[in-house]
Amino acid sequence: MSYRGVRIAIDRPRRRLEAPIGAATLLLGFEEPVRITRGGLEPDTLVSVYCGPTTTPAVGEHGGRLSGIEVLLAPWAAFTLFGTPQHELANRTVDPDELPHALPGRVCELAAALASLPSWEARFGLLDDVFARWADAGTPCSARVVRAWAELVRTGGAVPVPVLADQVGWSVRQLESRFREQIGLGPKAAGRVLRLQRARRLLAAGHGQAETAAVCGYYDQAHLSGEFKAMTGCTPREFTLARRGPGGVPGGDRMSGEATSLVLASGGGADFSKTGRVG
Image (cartoon, rainbow, N blue to C red):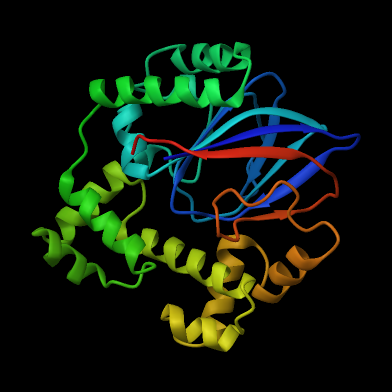
């Protein structure tokens, strides 16, 4: 689990493309709403936002002012905290207080409590305490799911699903069922996301497309390009060039050392980061 405090105040709207990552996202907004569009669906305008695991990009937009804390959760940790089958939330954006099994109002109350504190340090400390309590009272996740997820992350999504199932002592069907419940995506789809995440990281570091395709286990460069387009909405070249352009990625990526974001409108801002202790 990681926290990223955000405070942005600019004189123009900002739009960011967010690529799929191997995490669920909880934005605890302090006041200003964010407008999120995904996959041609009607936009959602929310102050606090929960988004489960995704295989498609989203575009987030705000009017130039935004403050709050973004929490990145391992998907199984989100299952424990909220008790909601994660397949119900995959590729969706929802108000966290409307999660089917969440305690009504508790996320809104937490966001208000965080906003009232005088420093990011105090806010992160409160999050540590609250998430520890929620995790203790939450729905236990399967240790085998945690092991399988960790292996997928370690290999960048490269481990074959039958091998993964065998490693944790389940059939492929059992693994797929538990992943849908506690991760939100099946193991094959989760592997696709993690593999592309690794590919974006290598491309951002200056590696060529052919080399990246080979290292990450794609059939060829065309296979990499097709997966990249399907999950980010642009080609590897477009993504890489845009990140190097004048807009860059003000405020940084959502995950340290990862290429997760692309600013679609220029602007400035600030963020402060900390790694949490839970999950």
